[in-house]
Image (tube, rainbow, N blue to C red; front, side):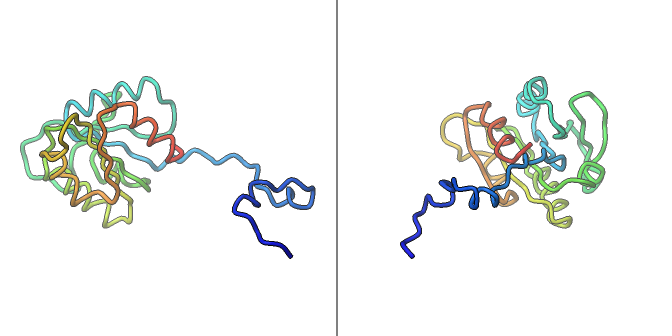
Length: 164
C-alpha cells in the first residue's frame, strides 16, 4: 500500500469511494442571536437585516439606566421588545457587535447569561484604527472568540461562515 496523500479524500472519484461522500446540504442554524451593544452597531445590524434573510434573530440593547441581569431589555429590528432570558431560550450562539460606545456591564451581563446556559459567545468590534478602546476592554473578557474589523460587511461573512 502506497502513502496516503493529504488530498486523497478530496480526490475520491471511483464509484467505491464516492459512495462515502456526503452530498446533503447543511441546514441553516436557527439558534444564532446577533446583539448590537450600542447605537452605531445597531445601525450596522439594521442594514444587515435588509440584506440577510435567515433565521438569525437580530437584536439591540436599548438605552437603559437601571441595573439589570436576566431581564436585560432587548429590541428586535422590527421594534418588538423582549428580554435577554427570552432571547437566549433557544440560542446556541450569541454574536455581540460593538463600536466604541459600549457599556461593559451589558457585555458582562450577556456573557454571564450565555455561560450559564452553555451558549458560545463571539464578539465583533467595528472600529477603525487602534482597537485598544472601550469596546475591546468590554468584550475581551467576555467573548470566547473576538473579531476586530473596520469593514461592516465582515459581519455578514462571519454569519455566513457560521451557517447562518
